Image (cartoon, rainbow, N blue to C red):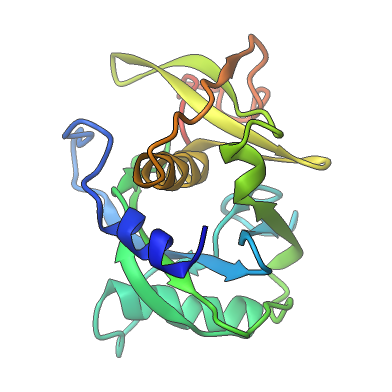
Length: 216
């Protein structure tokens, strides 16, 4: 797999059906970069957020945040946050399906970003660790994708999650990574291994108080 394959994969149509998740007030936009390097196979970098944060403390996600005055668009927001959090910039080669967070406050706009020769490093106290994710290990079935059956807003579906050492990527961020893997697999004309269903929620009781179990 090379950059050309990744570019074609990102340009494919969404593998998910069109669905409106809005209930009540419209969610606010947020934007993340899904940063990719080739070394020589593709590696995506996720971040472990500090346990001291007010929102999403101790969770794994992708560099990103809310728009600020001066951001030209949401892609610019994602690139600004990428630089602020991990000290690099890159080329946005496309976007993935927007996905809401469990609170309903935000909807995430993901942008796949090639870093070229740049390598991320922690530049913000909001970030506790960088977590490299070798995509080929999931495409070849060497690493297992797990999933749990969940219900949110009356909709039941399987939500994927990824074990990254002692950390777990789950919720909205896991859907983002899963979609990227699905698009790459489709471009390579291979089947992405079916997630292994488990009964234990990777987020424990984090969202148990009046919110039910669902994506981040």
